[in-house]
Length: 126
Image 1 (tube, rainbow, N blue to C red):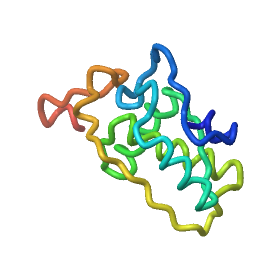
Image 2: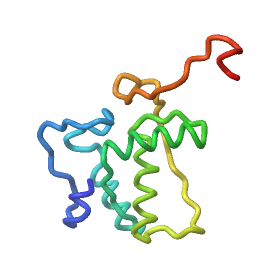
Image 3: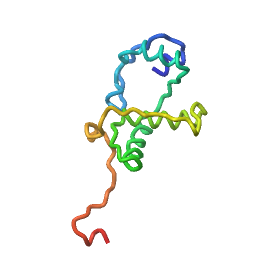
Image 4: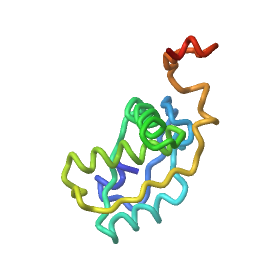
C-alpha cells in the first residue's frame, strides 16, 4: 500500500512471499487497495510503513498504558501514529482515532515472551 501510494499508483502490485509478523498483514495484494488509495488521496492522507518490531512493541504499550490487548496488526495504528507525529503529519492537538479490530489473544504464538513475576502466595507480593 505504501509503495503504491508513494508511486502515485491507483492499485497495489502483488508481492511474492511475505515473511513478516502481523499475520493479518501478509496479504500479497490487499483487498480494497484501489478504494483505500483513492480515499488517502481524496482526504489528504498518508501511507506509512512500520516494522514488525514496532508493531509488537506497540502491542505492549497498548496493553500496559491503555489496557487494550491488540493484535500486532491493530497495533500498527499506534506505530504509524508515532511516525506521523515524528514527521509532523499530525499535530500535538489533533484528535486521532486508532481502530483495532483484532484481539492479541489470536496472536499469542507469535508474541515475544515477556518476563513476568509469578505470584504464588501473598508473600510473593511483599
